[in-house]
Length: 152
Image (tube, rainbow, N blue to C red; front, side, top):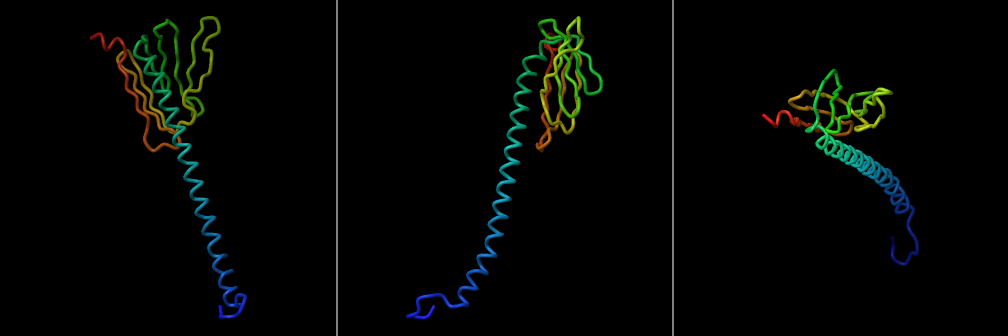
């Protein structure tokens, strides 16, 4: 800007508008990337919390169980209260059900909602679970010894 003039020259005005039009899309792109990463981090933390909650429940229930049987992606056993419990994969969810004499398998508790890959095996010696949840890079692995194994 020349001395004594009160405004911008045409060239200065065009340059400032041009730079602004270049910087605004860059700013929006950075904001979009930041929001997407924050959303992915939120999903990852939620999946980790669900995995930790499931691990705590299974660690309280499995070690004292008996009469374990296993089929493809399904595990049944009798818990310490004499109630039969079944964990099974159904529509990419790990489901817990309880057997009631008169009406068969009842209840439908979703233990893990978004399963990508599951390996579930149990017997009277051990309970082995390896599950990969959608959004997590590392699989959740659980290996528990049953009460009968600890008595040996």
